[in-house]
Structures are given as structure tokens and as C-alpha cells.
Length: 348
Image 1 (cartoon, rainbow, N blue to C red):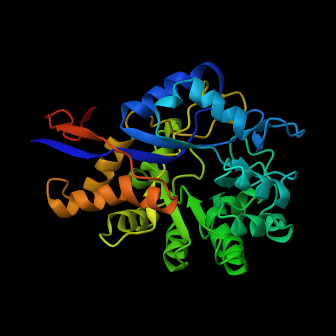
Image 2 (tube, rainbow, N blue to C red):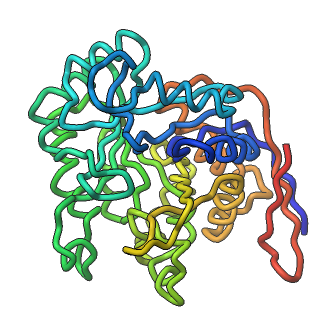
């Protein structure tokens, strides 16, 4: 059975485009799958830890990294958001200046040493106390969080009864929401039922992005045969966590969970000291999301199913980020074969 599905162009509100020679091909892959715009992660080398090129801090600026993206083909996007990487050097004055200049729209929290390029991260509590989150609230800047507790022993980082994400969503993020109820926060790439439950119970100022891999797979898929291409951070979790994520995104009343692929390329996946974290889904992310919706029981051939999918992929994220709806559409073509009935082809 074949299926054709035409949707509005969409925004990938969490993706990695790295730097250097690989940038043009990564941007091309995103444009090829109907992306109208991107939120480009700032964990480059050096990180995007300052706003203006003229600032004296030893980081790349939002101005510089945005220019790199534009020069690599990003000028074809309707919208590019580059979050400021929150470091020990981030100050309330920086937030105010960036917001007033119209350059700063979001900031990114990384748990120190918690993922790729997170060595410049700074403890979450410090930003609650030093005025940075308050300045973000005052100037309408969105906080994007990699929601995992840092500096945990291995026995606690991923244990039978808890893990780094669950600790963050029970001990860290609640304090920020309570302290700054008007601060808009995105729990990026949520992976656990506890995180889903927190997002759903939080005020309307709190939302979350969800990746294709966390909707499709569990930690068992990663470990059975050690399929390292599924290794990403936060790690894939368990069946009940995937079920909670699926229930959240397919809910016809969903207003909080949206698409953010966390597409993360690496020139070398397996290294001498381990495995680089990240799943690259550029070029195929809408197809993977559609597959996950179908596996969750959504019929993409009826109006209700298409509406739920369109809300998740195309509507909720841009509304939260206050992004103007793009013009134009893109079309899915699904061709069933006996070899692989879930094959999805894409064309513009």
C-alpha cells in the first residue's frame, strides 16, 4: 500500500551542524527533508559562548557561527536560531545586551562533561543564583536544557532504579521552574517517563523536544549486538519510557512535545577511548518520526492521525519559540514492499 502525505515545512528545533567542511552537506540534508529552519547547537570547538564577535571572551560568538551557517548554505532557511552556550563566563549583562540587539533568542545549558562538547558546561544551580536565569526571564530568552545530572558515579548514572535524567528532572529543573515561573524552558531530547510526567505537570512555559531514536528504540536495541550507531546521549531507555514518549507525542491534545532531532554527525563514531555520542538523522527524520507514529498505533491515512503528526512535527515547536509559520509544503511518499513495508521515500 502506498501513501502520500503533504505537510507544511517544519523546523528542526535541536540539531548539530558542527563546523568546517562537513557543514554544507549537513545543511543540505536538512533542507532536503523540508526544513524551514533550525536551532543549531552551540557545542562547537570552541563553543558559541559569547554573543558579539568583538567580545573578548575566548569563544566563538553567535554572530560568527550564524555567519558560518549562512555561508554553508543556511541562507536557504527561513530561520536560524543559535543558542548561547552557558559557561562560567556568562553574565546577566551579556543576556541583556544580546536580547536588546535582537541577536540572542535562546541559551543552552550543558551538564559539565555530560555529553559531546560539554566540557565548558557550568553547574545548573549557579545560573539560578548568579542572575543569568533571571535576566533570561526578564528579556524573554528561552532556556534549552540538556536535562541530565552531572558528576554522578557510574552506579547512579544509569542504574536499575534511577538515572542521570530522572535525577535532573526531580532535583534540578523543579527548582528553576519554581524560582522563575515565567522563564520559558525546553527540556531537550527527553527520554524518560519521569521527564515526560514533569513536563506535562509543569506550567505552559515548559515544553520538550523529542528525537526519532527515542520514539523508536530502547536500550535493548542498542545493547543487543552492541549497535553503536544507536549510541546517543541521553541514552535510550526502557520500554515504559518509550511508551510514555509515544503517548505524549500522539496525544491529540498535545501542546508541549515537539520535534527536535538531535541529529548529531561524527567524522569518527568509534574512537580509541570509546564511542562518540549521537545519531545522525539528517535527510530522514520526518520519515523516522512517521514510522514511530505508526508503530504507536497512529493511522497516517486518516485526518485525526495526520493532525496529530502535523502538530508534533510542524506546529507546537514554532509556536513555543514564537517563530512565524513558514510558507510551502513538503511531501512524503510511502511505498510498501514485501522486503521492507516501512520504507518511506521523500520528495519536495
